[in-house]
Length: 522
DNA sequence: CGGTTTTGACCGGCGC
DNA sequence: GCGCCGGTCAAAACCG
Image: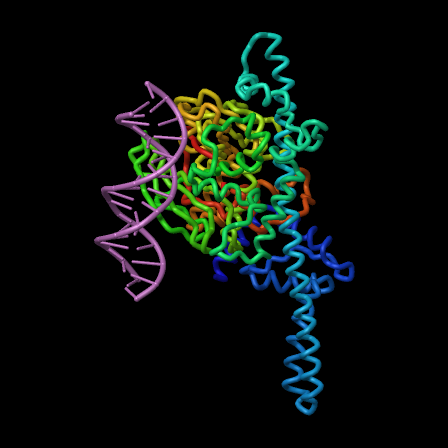
């Protein structure tokens, strides 16, 4: 366990992101009496360097560590020199113990706070990215229209339909008076995101009786879960967006799925969760069977996932997550859960305004972001909005160079959030003309790929690898010190997924251009 | 013996 | 209405 944790933390440190974040977050969260926390590599193998660091840092050590050290010294002293004053020692120790408890409590709350901040920021980032894409898109659209050329972007918007193009502005933040309710309910605004996130956080505080049905008011939070379960029974089959928008804000979310494409020899990627296989089917167009799993970490957990090998490249494992965990997740699983949640949020923010697929290439859209090359594709072909994280892209692969590009895709930049919509993205859409778009995200940044590949190669625990990759991306400072405040490890926001819900995945290796396909997150 | 996997049956949605 | 397909159920088999 310790080893695993250590490995994961090491990965997280692979980027400056968390380090800076942690330090800054700690700085902010620690009470003023505590000095700022410098970078602490608690798991450093280099004892010497650590000792040295400790010396240099000692004056600024967090109270917890400082007190721990002090306690240790005092304990030794009391046992060897103060035998004559056992009572004093006892009381002293009790006081110190209480102090440690208090420290522990503080740190826990700090962690909770940071986790929440992280989730919130993720949601905001997604919305911001989406808006930026829309802005760019509109500009290009104007140009495209003038010269009669149909750029991918323009096509995408057109495909997205009236609602997509105009409102694509998807201005969740400034809902009009008339559209107020609808907009807020349907789009993933920062506020909404935060709300969802907080609800997710609540899962950690609320004891859920497995035997009981989730309260109706939790529908929003549990949307995905119920859906996947799928029974189409509970959800409208015909996704009439118009109606949807008016009545069920939760419908879109419910159907949101996040898929992860990764190269893996293993039958299933390790994502930190426990799964039970409940079915297997041969899917049309793919010689490889599709396996159905459901989360067994808690009774009644609605999260399910599908695992299937890519028909084109059997070394690629496509894992599709749906639903939100209704229970606390281990750190490893949280990474994936958060990822899928963020991806889902991203997906939904775009899908709510369109009923057709579209494609936008985001490369270069966000120059400020080192990993802006990630793209997302929306496709109407999928029955459910799906966002795909493609971890199969190799440094040398050519993004979007697919034999048969989806008729309509809506690539959206997800810095660090890669995902692909499984097969659906590649398969032309046949049924569900009104289906919500599928989102395909491909990550092309070599650094990211390398990071992920290396992590995966060194550790079968894909969750850790994915977390590292995302952390790296998210944490890549835009200019020197990333002062982003938040950190990961948070709760699962799995609404299905982005902050990389202990997401799923396997081993990595070079990739083929075929890249992303798929579906919909944790 | 309990939990998991396998696998055929069943169900509902959708297209023709 | 029928057939196809995706998804789920549940009994039997399997495994540690």
